[in-house]
Image (tube, rainbow, N blue to C red; front, side, top):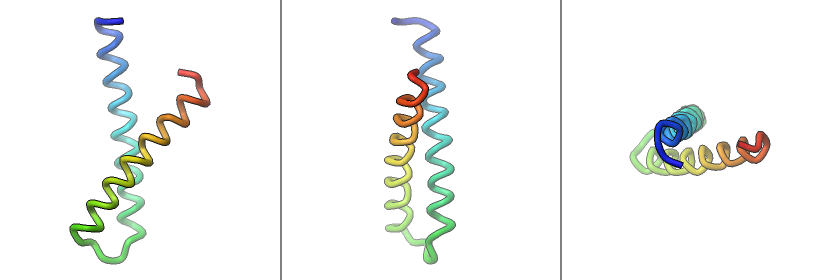
Length: 64
């Protein structure tokens, strides 16, 4: 499968992951009391894992 459909699918997947990552990173920042470099790095990594898990769960439920 090549062409515009693949590009659109990739763009939508990237946008969904970025949306989840942003929401989870903001939530992480709201819950921590001290913002330092280590907290930001851990929060970004955990938000990334959470975004991947959320996308996988949504795909499992919707079948797409």
